[in-house]
Amino acid sequence: MTASDPREFSSKRVLVIGGTKGASKAIADGFLRGGGTVAITARSAPTEKTAALYIQADVSTTQGTSKVIHEMLDRFKGADIIVHNVGRNDSDSLSTKLE
Image (cartoon, rainbow, N blue to C red; front, side, top):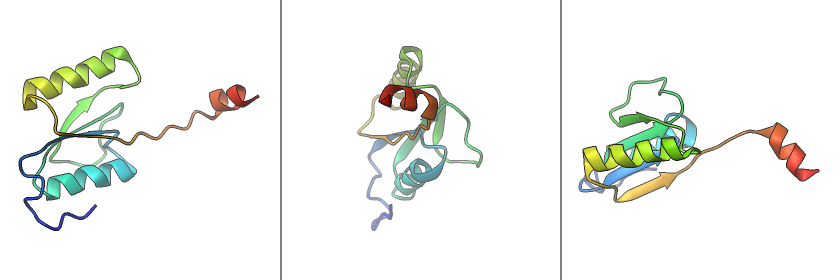
């Protein structure tokens, strides 16, 4: 993601779910470069330092989802953009479901 205007997202509150690695991290970084106020959430902490707010949570659970919602409301008073880009490789359960 390349922001053509460094202020493109300056008034936007952004939540990137799964934003600590791979494509999700690149998306979060793009919103940061565009001036967005960015929060990322994932089960594991980012391996690199980030300017984004990090919320450790597992959004596949009610408790994790609740935590993210409360943090976003408390810190940012909501979200304008939510990117849900979570990858998961659960081949054991997938293979049993396809049988």
